[in-house]
Image 1: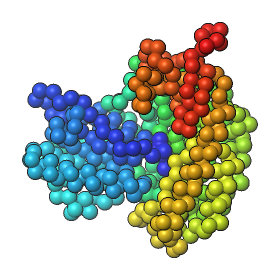
Image 2 (image 1 turned 60 degrees about the vertical axis):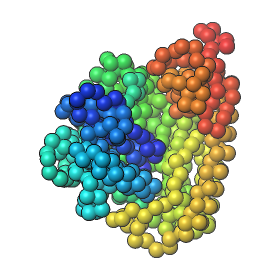
Image 3 (image 1 turned 135 degrees about the vertical axis):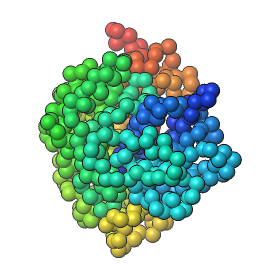
Length: 455
């Protein structure tokens, strides 16, 4: 949100660059998932055409944008905290403009204008392609129309990486899981024509990008002139190197898609498949559309076709009405499936969703205790999966220096495992074969092998 999304959630990021001379500068705070990060890239691409440079910090900016996420309460709280700090900045720099974008903007525009008079502009996620027109105006304004057109999917992006790119293939969601605000803030599903997607990825390949990640709230319900497995086949022929995608809904994960991942050489053997709960009763209350047994059959099919595949998931702890027995069913599911990793969260009510009105709220201390047990059990499973890779040969794509040790390089396996190796000067985007020497909880330590397979 990954990175249904909920796409896998990531920490708040700050996208910036130097403020040059007299040109206008923009700074974007991005909260939430990969979809939001890519929306920020789109806004930066549009604003660069309007004469904006990216600022190194909010203090250097003429325009500050908060690109918000409403899926998790924590991300929304962080946004309001940062927005409060921006009020003091605007007192010092009266000419600075402040915009709020994303899902909180779509859901709560009246509340934002009332609570934060220092906000100048509000723009919903379906209107990011109009950010240039909005900020060109002098008066306080908002754009949160339910836009069914594809303009927000098909705009130039100012990308953070020179080797990995996100590409939107569809927008919105039709599933209406009882806990999720996405269908209300991002609208119903709209798929981008395959010709537009192919053209964008072909250009990325020509520019030297080595990996693309296809984005959508539910990518396996993509439908245009092609279905999603057919789209993967078309993209695989473009020579970009590696292809990933997020997020898949278990109900819509077809045998054809599993076969495409297994058989297409460019598609990486990693599937993010949110489970949310191991209890059929809770899955029904969540309106997920599958049972645990049906979910488990999907996992078995993946591992039959691709024993080496990495499988990750999302889990919600303390959903309304969840009993101790329901929680235990989730813990048993973690042990049975043995995910490579999970994104686990305490349930937080989202206004306007069915779950927010449900009875049987789990007390916060109990939700915390259940989440802690889920994370502890998953750590055991992750370490077991990682240790099984010791001694194996893996192909990694170098992404740059390790964040924890600058003397090491960091790359990822096709199954999305982080591997560190000694820095021998390989450039970002290099593909290196390594032997896994040691498994850790969050990463693997590797050593290069030469062309004859010797260290």
